[in-house]
Length: 324
Ligand code: PMV
Image (tube, rainbow, N blue to C red; front, side, top):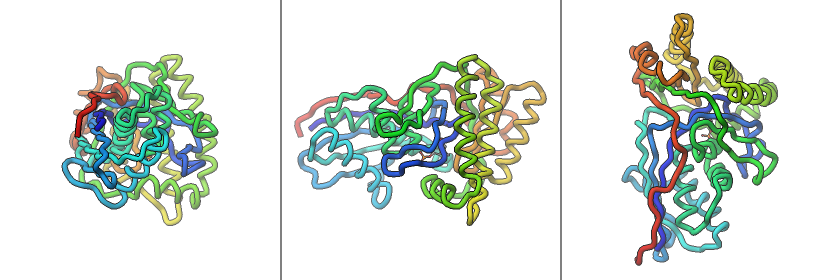
């Protein structure tokens, strides 16, 4: 029996991925850029076992069935193909994010699974190939393989669509978990609906391509204020595009909007802070590491705050062979 354990953390996009050009290979319609966080890790052990008749997946001690189990099996099928193996695996995963946080657990989950499964099945992948593999589980997972700031090149095929690190100024985030967060429409479903029904979708994609070029320039020139402005603008454009779906999908709640206003007030008082939000009501505030406590204090009446710094990217904790 071969086994490996890996850990990975969520990432938060400063330039968002929202739309696929190939949903089979999970190729995005445009590139994106994110900060890998150092909080809420997912730790996953994969044991390749001759005695199993099917894959087995447990999350936080509970055996999974239905869609989550099927997504893991589909992913492992791809790993087995790459490794030329017929053996099933036991996947044991622990996710430290509070359930209500809605914090890209699919990104940390598939980055940890890709890292552990590739090692357990004996694949020796480069960081680029690991990122490509994680992408097949959940698009944004390809960025959680990468430490600190990651650009996901949209690419034109499986080979060319991967994430890699880019140099950027020191940044941190304050995550605001808004009270009373309701379960949102899944990003997969909402992305599909946006491409099909939002009249703004084409403009969103072309503007995001231009935004990503500008963001890379701002990172290269160490221009934190510009990085922040682009982050907030890109998030609001994504939400505007999603809200224009038919039927409409609205992820931002009144408290999320209040948080954006609060962040604008902070900025007016000289604090470098810029708001963003993914497919849910929670808000993430990009700031400089030395301002995190001040930003968190300013938001605390709107929900629960968590401070995050730049994280390491997915990595193996242990790997080994045991007799089963
Ligand atoms: O990888 P997915 O399917 O969970 O999509 C992630 C979508 C956003 O979080 C909203 C944006 C992003 O780039 O992470």
